[in-house]
Length: 176
Image 1 (cartoon, rainbow, N blue to C red):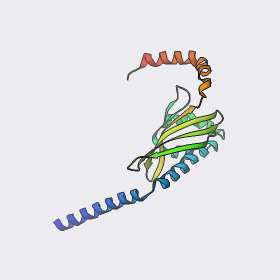
Image 2: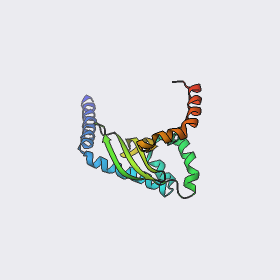
Image 3: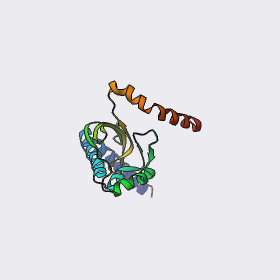
Image 4: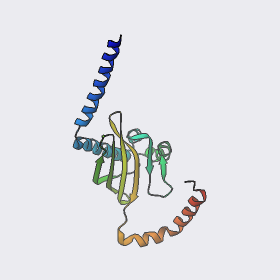
């Protein structure tokens, strides 16, 4: 009986080792190509108002942080917020014009930054992806509007009052 247990243990160890070796054999350039494809598909899904594809490319516990200070959306809340836009036939249209991708040593996590051509002109997106069921999914995404340095003072002046009010509100309920 001990021989059967030892044999089964060897099969399990060999199987795990082979899977780890197979994962290590996938090159970084292949992973980056897949990530690029998924990120582009995610942006296209929004432009084409394909709600299911869009949210299937995010992890179930994914986070979307928008350009407004109040926009820190957990997946389900973001889906509910976005659905009316998708139902109208077009949510938003972002096209990557530059992207940098970085991959963890164990090839299970990746992070990226991208410049986007959008209806808000150039924006920056950045985020984290996780490998789930052999698919790269967005776990965390941050969208920001790129502001030229020479225009920062003008933008600060525009948002000064609303930011002051929101800061006060946040500090009143801060629990960190």
